Length: 169
Image (cartoon, rainbow, N blue to C red; front, top):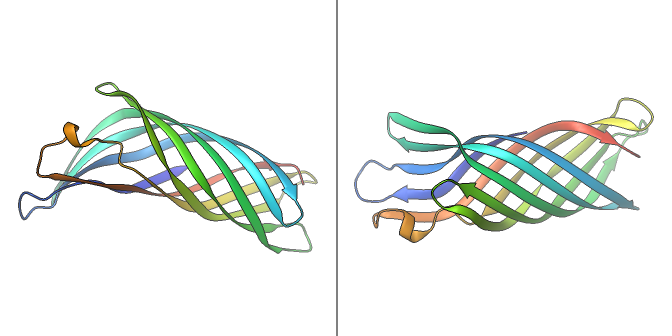
C-alpha cells in the first residue's frame, strides 16, 4: 500500500508556504469480511511506518521512519458491479481509528473517516487480486502546542492505493 498526504500543517508567517506532514507510508493491512448479499461488512487492521517531511518552495527535508501507527478500519461496502467471471467492484466507507507514535510525543489517538473503491479480480476459484483506491480524512497528528504560533493545523488528507490478495467468495 502506498499513501500520499496533504493538509496536517501550514506555515502562514510569510510568502513561502511551507508544511510539515507524514510521507512515504509503508503499510500492511489485514482485513476480515462477511458478505450479506450486495453488502459487505469488514474489520481491518493496519500496521505502518511513515516518514516525516518538511516542505517549502524548492526544498524538502525528511526524517525516515519517524512515525509508527496502528489503525483499525471497520467498514461497510456496497457491490456496484459484478462480471460473469466473478470480478466485483465495490464502494466502501467507514471510520478510521488510529494510534500514531513518534518519539517526541508518544502515542496519539487520531480518528477520522475513509472511503473509496475496491475491486476483486479472480485468479483461482477462491483466490483473487484485490485493488483499492481511496482516501481518508483525519485530524492532524500534531497539536497546537507542538508547533510555532504561525503554523496553522489542518485536517490530514491521505490518498492511498493498494494491491493485495483476497481469499473467499
